[in-house]
Image 1: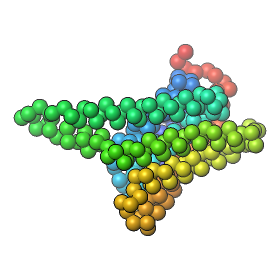
Image 2: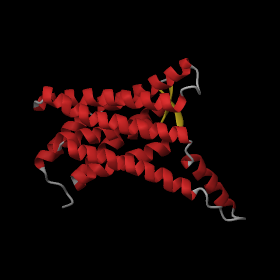
Image 3: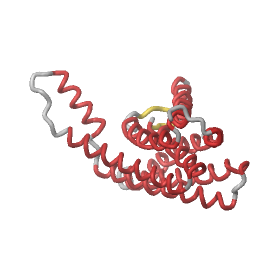
Image 4: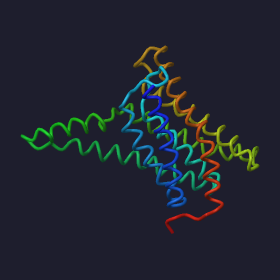
Length: 234
């Protein structure tokens, strides 16, 4: 159960860091979290662990929290600010992939064993296969754009304050379904048999679904912070 407890700790750490960033920097603290989440997720994704009896990657938590951020932005600041944050995340993801892959073309210092080791380790983390990179970019853009649209679609139908949990969960859970489906199909279709492909999809979505269900209190917390407006860094 060690991994499961650590997973829970990491989940809460992500949520509280988002709230802290919002409390410190206001709207820009939320927007700042988007590039943090997509970059960290693409580093953590190489680490595969066993959770709840299923094989999973660690990047699922921090990536899924980006949907919490866009929902808080949508609720408090409107659709345009949420869309801006999505594009900032997309730009950050492309920039990281480009700059880190360019760095890999440098030759490490000859005779320096540590330089050789770090070069190989960096290559393992950042040398993305084109198909995986395309899958990540497509899944991110499609799911995040849908999340912003869906939040406001459901807000028109469930506009009351006590219905925030409805629009939050309906938009996020469907968006993460799109994200998981697009990524798995583009990245792994034809690579694995159908049964394995389905298992990867179910595992990925299941963990993101848990994050989506757990983030509801933090959406309400984000709205409370917005109403008070006493951000720490002016």
